[in-house]
Image (tube, rainbow, N blue to C red; front, side):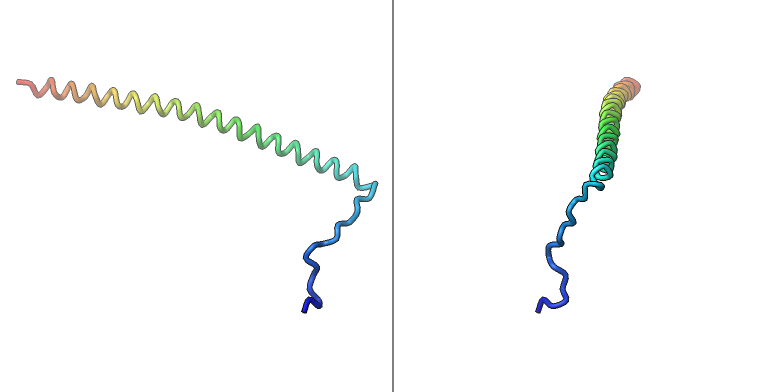
Length: 79
């Protein structure tokens, strides 16, 4: 029995003309917040890409140093 149960689809309250400016303001605030969040994410992505480039450079430098140490050790082991 469906007696006492809430309807599955709630009735929508019609938008009163007086509420329109408030709704517009809220939507503009929401839109601005989304824009700011997107800009923040883009800045974060750019920072991560810069960091990734720097880390790649460091990995390359460490690899080069390891090669040089190997050469130095081989040279020092020669009689």
